[in-house]
Length: 370
Image: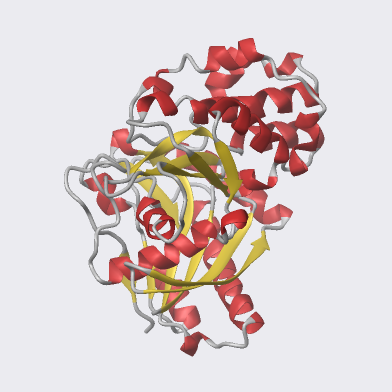
């Protein structure tokens, strides 16, 4: 099955679109991918949508700008698919399915609520291709965390590699999440803590640039380990997997504990980068065995300063997804193509060891073009 997977992550920097050939159980080919960056007005719209989503009580509510944002990102996802297909000299008729994650604006599984905006029916009609969307809701409704969703895809990829196990696949987007694969044991997965979100927000507030490009600002600073240790006192980090969190979960807590207003841009970026690395390392004592190899994907894989901090704190080999033949930038987009094919067949997407759901669960809602 030829599927285009789509991902707009919590970093809110753009849309990743990637082609994959899969039957939902094996990965036959990881195809080409592209990133369509959000322009400044779209990013501002999404930031406001995140703020307006704070008061949500029902997953179909769309207060404030949420409705406008939902239509806008749906249409941009359609453009991303068409751009990818044009680049490959394909047409929508050449693909079987689209996996559409949408944009997470609210994630509170403890309240039984997760919201990803994006209109699956509108996307299906725009492309003339069936669209699988709304991947997380079924798991959360059944008492699961609804995240992370990608471990079953990570398992399919790791099975093709000759690496010492356990292998940890770490995705560092706005939030960081990890999947640990150890032979035939069920994969263990969880969110580890803030990924790039706090760094991005800090850099934008201080410099007007939406991220620390290549970790250059952090590389010039000195991390305040005492402040990092204070943030690690949050009970989330001692909680065993599975567990998940919202992008903005630690914004206030870090502001209270870390007091970054008193630090330079360089030292603040270094401290937040060290915090991301430290929160990843904090999950290791909660695992049955420490991973022998860590494979890093997402925006964090493009940050040499973060990669160096991870290697020091983990005491293990750290590789990027690109180094093992995957795409660091497109891995989650490929994942949602895989998950779409899997959901179409009614196969489980989530498991007790990945989201805490009582039994393996399928998910997703299929929208056909009219």
